[in-house]
Image (tube, rainbow, N blue to C red; front, top):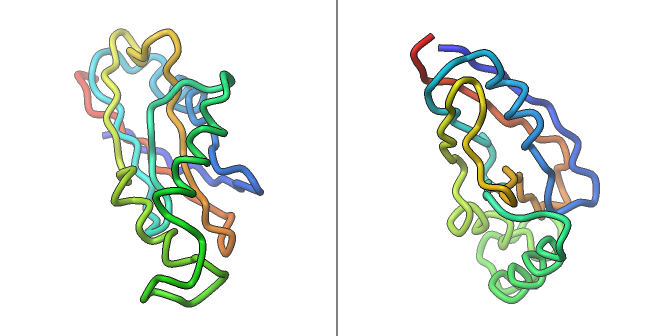
Length: 134
């Protein structure tokens, strides 16, 4: 089964758009499913609309749900790092995107997004795997 490992630098962004990378990976592969997986304990994946203010809304939601302070038992690293380890509980480490004729079947406003609030590690990997008929 075809697989590709993306190497990313997330910088100061909480969200990184993976949609074009997913499209490129699926191109020419026929019908199937693209599995997107992030092998990190402090990052997650989402399908969401980008560019409409949703990124700021997501950041605000996550700051309410996972405050960056010293309340966490898991407390090494920068302040609030324990929250980073809870993010994948809310936004899972993998998602599946159906693919038809080599094209991800995303809705008009849907993007595949890596969500990463971890200030201690901005180097990330994302694994794309295609399960299909070719």
